Image (cartoon, rainbow, N blue to C red; front, side, top):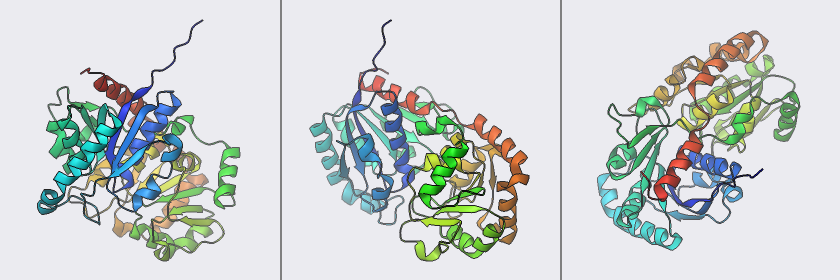
Length: 378
């Protein structure tokens, strides 16, 4: 009986940086490609050069050891969309730098992962006649996607809400790319004990995983710091990602509470967690849904389009949405109830809703289509 060996992946270029949300989906695509034996023949990654990228890209070397990272500094130091004056000043040299890198790597297709790092990369790829695609992971299309959509062959959408009314062949709803590890289902008791041992938790009680995003969330840090005693009294163990440089505002580590600036291996942590408290970043919520772990989501309140709230609403009954103003002692009591034995029935109901919310094959569908584009298909 013959077996089919997967064809190697294309000579691929990614453009995305500045936040974990513009990096993690690319890592998930690479993990899926590796699991299927279809790793890209060559990988080039354009980033913004912000410090947070070093933590977010910590796993890249294991997935693509020969990947070259090229910085295209276009975004402001604090992130977000650059102003027109900054775009005018930096776009041309960044585009020329991206063009030289694409030629050097003989890249065949470019995927923009979000953020304005994609702008010079897409312009450079277009000047070389290379096919381009964008990945929109939020429920509300970002400014980069809205600006560049007309210049690319494909826009992959993680959530139905961001797909335009007349999508044509350019816009495709595929779901969010996920780490293959999340398809393994919930962690066994033995896996939970081993994970607890590795991170420094006793592993005797329900696990609350607190995720403030790659840059942390001050309100979540202060909330857990203020009410850590209430969680401990309720028998809840806490693993808290506070964000780079934010340990002073986070809770002090103690028995049953571990704080890290940045967590690696999040898929395994999600599989072991009983409950998640998090912001509403698209990548975080996609992983929460895939792991079938209920979450209390506190959307970042200062985005004009409220896209984190819309991301969370896309998961329906799988999550509970709470405003920053509700971060109080009453919520601590609710977290203790929901994570503990009396919340088991509600957790099961929310997990069933999450199972319906997110497909598990988005990474494969995106990679297969990128291969098609790289080989001249449409």
